[in-house]
Image 1 (cartoon, rainbow, N blue to C red):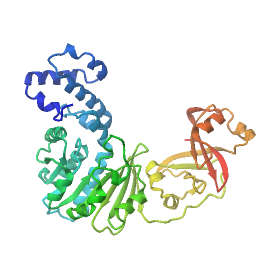
Image 2 (cartoon, rainbow, N blue to C red):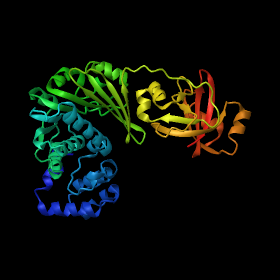
Image 3 (cartoon, rainbow, N blue to C red):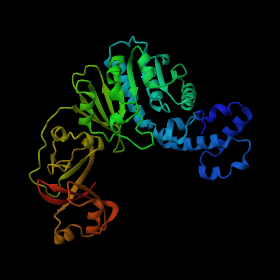
Image 4 (cartoon, rainbow, N blue to C red):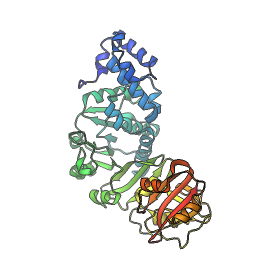
Length: 422
């Protein structure tokens, strides 16, 4: 693949460009692999470019549907599209940044030359969503800038910004850290450090990403009122706060989509009074002070008919179980089960809700009685000596169906199967 992307070359031949665009639209739903085998049949079409665009648009329909609906958007090679944010997570960041710029900094618009600088633009999904949100708040696009060091991606982002009405935003082809060092000040700096090493392998530690945020942390804090970092959801929250400095971490946002943890967003400021954590899953949000130590009450007795709750992925990540119990009036089934019960249904609980129909030990006779008529079930293990696969084999149950079995430790030592229905 040439360093400068094919979209630049295609513009030199308008007839071929029109043929290529028509081909892309006509074959938008076709299998790209099959089309690749037919290259020789279309000499008037730039097939390499066309195949990239068809594959990109098909991927975008699921990941960034509003972009896929725009026929003028240009897509990059596969890896850049694979690594970009989804539309849902990008829109969350856009709301967060707009809130920081328009609400938390002052009652009037900031007087700094820039209100938003993205030092790691990539394909530009995050920057575009953030910039559009700020424009909706009345801020001119010429007060926003993004930096990308790959020439080809810069061409694509510049084109797409223009297509989406953000042509006045500055697209800077260069190194983000170098640009940081010449920047005077901005309201918000955004960074999404690359989480791959020189060999393409995934990395997770902050210090292993590019750029290494820890090595430039003080400069970031000097150059912006707020710094927003997009980090791996694999990172431990407490360790991340400690690494970045308790006095600098203003907010931590654990962002999940459809109960899958996608991103860890950290908002930094030069002097943060208190760190607050936000657990977000789709449209449900739960927030709490980071240093909260609310104890987790343990249910004294479990019985059939109780309601069982499994917290969503963001809450599981944040481990704020004591506060969950306090706010929703639930109790844990065990000290490390992370499953909760109540006698009355709590619709507002942030997670999945079940009704316990039976409780069984691992005694064969008891299992036979409790599992009578059940041939398949969805099995989850929490603080239990067997894995899901081992337990499924032992119980001789197929996967799926309407029955849910939670295998866990009740109290301190009792292993139980909680047989439930949604």
